[in-house]
Image 1 (tube, helix red, strand yellow):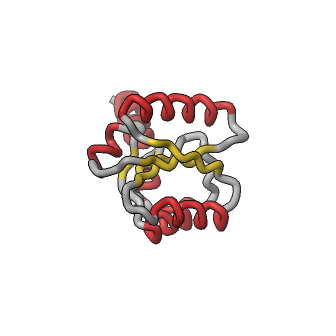
Image 2: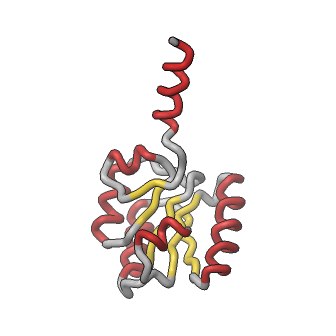
Length: 127
């Protein structure tokens, strides 16, 4: 949440894409709500089920121009490229759960770079 505010200091609302059918999604969403409340931000949940439904909802959310987007690690995104294009079309500053989204054109990620960590561990084993 704080990274997103640094990226887009004018945000007042945060859309959160999360997987409602995953146990981890409930925990992540609960934490995001608590942090947003402490920062004075309004949270709008988007339960990702369908790309067309999500696009309509995000377009409506983005219309006022004071919002940002967090994609949780517990969201199921089979087609990352299409999802990143959708977010670019609605012009929302977005932060994603893993580096792979950034490699595909997403703006920023908030988790550790797992590929880099694995490569570093592999280098340690070889040495």
